[in-house]
Length: 226
Image (cartoon, rainbow, N blue to C red):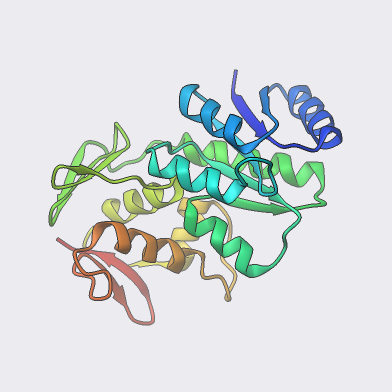
């Protein structure tokens, strides 16, 4: 059974969401504060985290940041009353995979949960080990190294990196990345791919400001080169 961890401190929402998710066949665990949610996410195997931002003890931004720093790549759907673009960007930059603003429709929540689980379970054609520069990517084990140092990537960053590896030497457009990695059609104003490419460059490039491997093809998209 698919295991979800709901990290939420509002009792009414915990009851409503828990009942609805269980009725859909999910095994739902609960944590009422950020510290407990972080500890459970590190210690136990979950398929998806539903993470509120406004949590006691440790807010959701800190939880997702700390999880990614620990190397936990479980997909994270952030639930929050904060609807400002800046807050959504912060969540994505820290490693969240999707963002849903309260109040939300239960059907939309279920659709996003299903999409994240589907993408997390997608088998990557770029299997095995791959190298570029001083970076080693083990797709099967979902591990990334720079030299001897392990690099923590979010689930979306890792998915985007695998997609670039699959098309190494060829241009990957933003629309293609959104469809294949995120699973939805692109909109002309989205900068989702750009944000995640910037994150990959910060973690994998010797000089992120002058990338040697994840390069921009102006007017078209991005390309991974050795």
